[in-house]
Length: 204
Image (cartoon, rainbow, N blue to C red; front, side, top):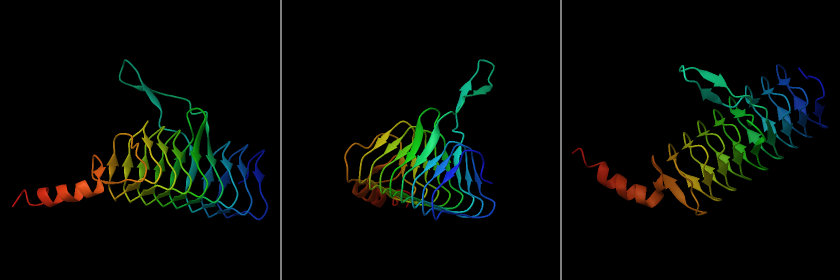
């Protein structure tokens, strides 16, 4: 389904059961596999591949607590911008911004089953393995590598060339580029290995 005011570039393939929301722009030489859903106002660059059942532009998780214990939904009026040469795996979700844009920069590679929350920015050529989750308004640098099941807190910054081992949990900003981390809360990788050598023996 291609809705109103959508622009699709030359040589782009959109397979069956995809839906492209109104006022969206899709570049040239893209491939959208069956079941991809692109919500309104999304901006997608050239040579972007999106695998089946991924959702781009769904509402961010924004709710305001009320005095009576209920929650009021905060309108999510921003959009998603995906730059050129990005590949996104199956069953991944990229939320629209509350205001402004959620941005996936040029060359990023995002695996299956990943959650990118509202107002996140993923830097150029950053790669994320399956089941990684990034909370809202976090800025991720360029050329980062995130292992599977990494969890990133919201409203923090991660420096360029940061590497996270599988199941790493990052709770605060990482300001020094080019470092590797592991564990939850995340600590430097070599420090984690030394710590692991100690605590794995603690129960014996």
